[in-house]
Amino acid sequence: MHTALVIEDVRLTPILVSDPPLLNTQGVHQPYTPRLIVEVVTRGGTTGVGETYGDGAYVEPARSLAEALPGRAVTDLNGLFALAEGVCGDVRAADGGGDAGADDRVDAGGLRGVRNAEKIRLSVASAFEVACLDALGKAVGLPVHALLGGKVRDSVEYSAYLFHRWAAHPGPGEADDWGQALDPAGVVAQARRFADTYGFGSFKLKGGVFEPDREIAAIRALAEAFPGRPLRLDPNGAWSVPTSLYVADQLKDALEYLEDPTSGTDGMAAVSAGTDVPLATNMCVTTLAEVPEAFARDAVQIVLSDHHYWGGLTRTRELAGICRTFGVGLSMHSNTHLGISLAAMTHVAATVPELAYACDSHYPWQTEDVITERHTFTGGRLTVSDAPGLGVALDRDRLAALHRRWLEDDGTYRERDDAAAMRAADPGWATPAVPRW
Ligand code: GKR
Ligand code: MG
Image (cartoon, helix red, strand yellow):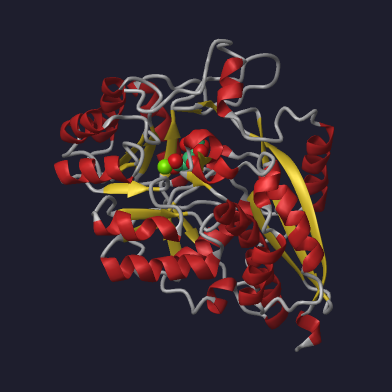
């Protein structure tokens, strides 16, 4: 083994990142959201970085993996996943006391599909995999995309991620300068600012917030304001099959795809059978176990991969191969994330030939970061970095400040809970059952 590539130390830094009041079907984003930053330090003195979800269910198994990793090589990615399976085996214990029903739970209140032990383990291991690839790339002087087989494009297209939103979180605190967007005019104004500032040419609206006709009107207003531009609507499974078919029919001339209109494979298959509007998902198919049935029943036409929960960059490429085999499209999902994950998304997206849709990214909503130079979208695209590794550097002062915020938090924000945030404005709010409409 090349000793310079052996892992000497692993550092974990849980942080809280500020987040604007973006609405979804579960409630509203909290003022702060948890993320976990992983650093892998080699004997050769190279540090690689990774990032993943930061709720307790992820941080606890990450600690076990961090302890077990020293002594292994950053090249041993297969060994990393085997190790994760061994040392993070008991993730259910970290996920609510070993409840046997944990496999049936949904993630983030129902926004990210099934929540099971394997998915949590992969989401944890993904940050270590990205950190190993970053360290390896830096050590040998190659960008991460080269370690994944080489880029097939020099830039990656992203879409504007539009949200209905409030002007500010309830209570004291500073508001950003976006203002509220609670109707079609507000959504169009937000889209215009995204287009003017970042050059985005396609638009995704987070739906499931208001009754479907109001969201249909928002998409119609976008279609009028941006004729011919790809538009997507994602209610996170909030609609029944008949409602989904109604929306699909109303918007069939306007939508590039409809994302997770309804919950579950049965529902998605029924919607798919009743419309020609393609269906995309980051909820119905989020694990390999869900692939065979969903693909056999043509329940989804596009999988929105999230390298965190699919287990990293090499496994995202395996998913791309599976999608290619079955003629299913591939694009990329995003949850609140920082610049390390955006760099990782861009490297892997650059290596997948069939990626034919602009990827999602929450990044423009995140004004805080842990890297020294924020990514800049130009013409709606990010240039693929050819610098060694991911091409990002940690800003240690920022990292320390965001970690301090996590340390000082009384537990209110250490778990993402959009329904709890909604209760700050509406004390009677309960997590809505699906279908809502
Ligand atoms: O940030 O509110 C949100 C989104 O709803 C997010 O949680 C989802 O996981 O971005 C995701 C999606 O596309 O469904
Ligand atoms: Mg989605």
